[in-house]
Image (cartoon, rainbow, N blue to C red; front, side):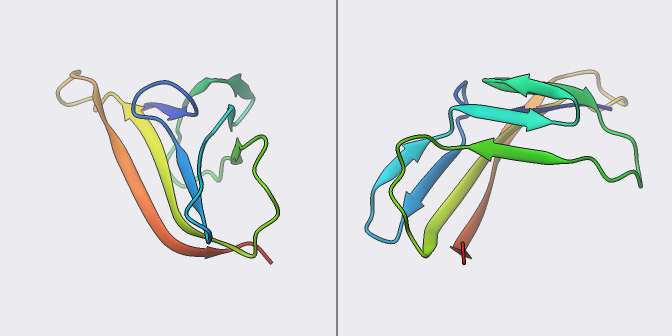
Length: 93
């Protein structure tokens, strides 16, 4: 299934520091793809490396919120779906 990890397109991936500062991801990497979005086929039960790069974010011990933007096309409908997944209190140490 084609899956897109989104850095700075909509819906954007955002990080909020423990001081309440907000930063938008500059680069997404998913498998071998890298850019402001990274699209690759996701294969069931095959681990695929993924990362988001946030620039100009100061040192912090944790993120109060990490919001990750994504887009995918389910094979049964072929209609693109997008959204975000949120993680609270993400430790960085």
